[in-house]
Length: 174
Image (cartoon, rainbow, N blue to C red; front, side):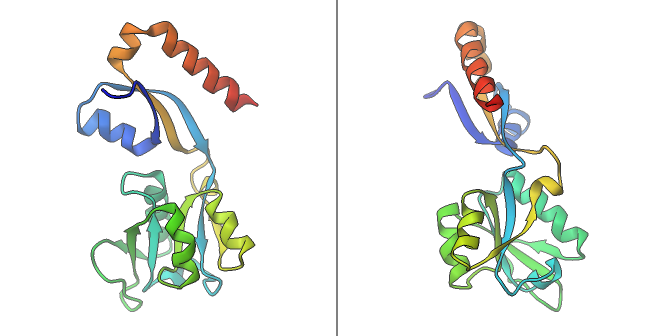
C-alpha cells in the first residue's frame, strides 16, 4: 500500500491477483511485441542453444513463458537449477538483470537472453550477438508489462484512476 499504480511484468499481475489473492486490476497493456530472443553470434538455430544458459529477466515474466514455448517447440527442454546438457538437449534458464545480459553474452557466460529493447539492439550494435526471434512473432500482441492499481484505489479515487488510464492510452496511441 505504499504506491497506488504500478508498471510491472504482466505475469506478476496475474500472480498478485490469482495466486496471492490481492485485489489488483489491470488498467492497460504495455510493451506489446517489444521483446526478442538475442543469441551469441555462433547460434544459428534454436537447437544450438542445447547445453547453454539463457537469461530471462524474472521467473514471472512473459519472456520466460514465450522462451519455454520456443524451446519446447524445437525439441529442447528448459531446466532450472540444473546444468544444461547438449546431449540431453536441455537449456538452463537463469534470472538476470537486463543490464547484466549484454556483458554476460559478450563474455560467453550465456548463450542468449530474452528481454525487451534496448538490450537486443545493443548486442547487435556491439556485434556481440544478434536477434534470433521477435517474441511478437511467437505470440502476437502479448503484453510484456501492464499498468495495475488496487481495487481500493479504484473505489476511493475513480476519477483519478480514469485520468491515469486515459493518459496512458493517449500516450500509447502516439
